[in-house]
Length: 199
Image 1: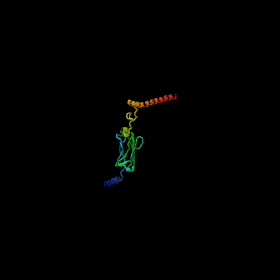
Image 2 (image 1 turned 90 degrees about the horizontal axis):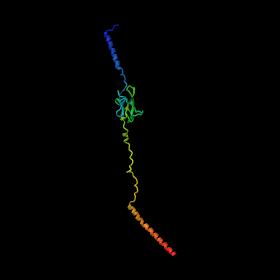
Image 3 (image 1 turned 90 degrees about the vertical axis):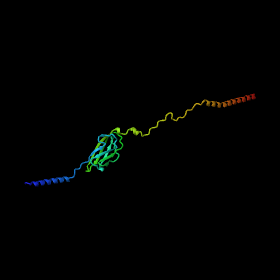
Image 4 (image 1 turned 45 degrees about the horizontal axis):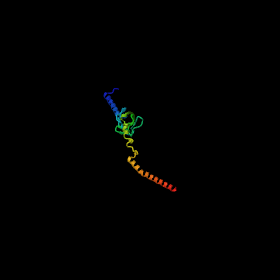
């Protein structure tokens, strides 16, 4: 059947309008949220000791469904608090890092479409950015030095008597010697007199 040209144009226009209306009415495709950057950067070697790990998302993550865990080279968690959401970033604080090596970061975040994304990356902490052991040891009390021989308290050695002291002691002994001789003489005289009387 032959269709007049104006009628054919009207049919094509109506089909185009219906198609456009269907596209406008269809809901937009939901895109999953993704991480666009991290601090420290993935697979990097830090030059300063980090105190937190920050993830920046393409869209604002959901606070209740986002968490970050950081572990040291020995597998011990070094996070010191909950993950904090601010705009399109998620931040987790760290304890003071003391072990050099590779640190692993794992994260989980829920998108607004209900889809949960997970991922992981790592960064390296060199020994050069860690506090030196001497700095921490300087705060500890140092042992007191042993007293020197000059300052040690020792009892004074006895000194030999001086010549004046010896002379004084010898002079004080003379009366005893003379008294003894006098007693001996008197006893001798008494003995002699008794013998004469008996004779």
